[in-house]
Length: 283
Image (cartoon, rainbow, N blue to C red; front, side):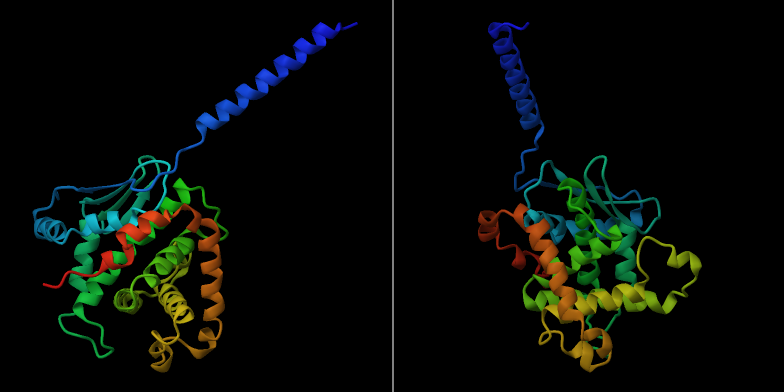
């Protein structure tokens, strides 16, 4: 039979093991902090991108994204990088080193596709440059948020990253949100003209440009039908889709507030006023 002393000893050992296990778990828990975004302008290997590299630095593009994202409480550093990509027009988030890379080739394509004059729809050249540049960084930051904060995703991750980017865009100041939505809408419309949907395109992890175009306009109209009322009036967004846009926006708003908003440091938000940081530099 076990003596009382032996029973007490076993209980004490069990308590010690439990305490040590709790401490081990506590040590592994990541510390979430704001101001954990680094930036890097990599010297472009292609001399044709040198002017673009200098323009990005002059306009302090990455510095402004860093400040905009500074309230986000992260478990580790996130790096935003502009880099050459061996001729590939692309952008991505790399999980292994927590880096968002936007290629000079991608930004160069944005510049090449921008119209020289304002379009009949009232979209300016600056809109078509600022919009896609803002959207591509925020889309890839969406992937980073999912990974670093372990945000659950129901559906395709690329669609969810679009929703995060669109949501953040729509919470900029009204004039900036309007400019970015106009510019990104122009980009999708331009891509639609050169895209002939086939089976392989439907298999892509990204939605077709036409789908992304309507999703963006629906989110915008759903959040602010006054600011974006003309997208329905002019026929860019079908009325049949517009009827559900308020609910679509509310669904994304609920998910963002539930899953991501708790990681935003409100003291830092008040300090940096991030909405105004994305205002384009007038030259």
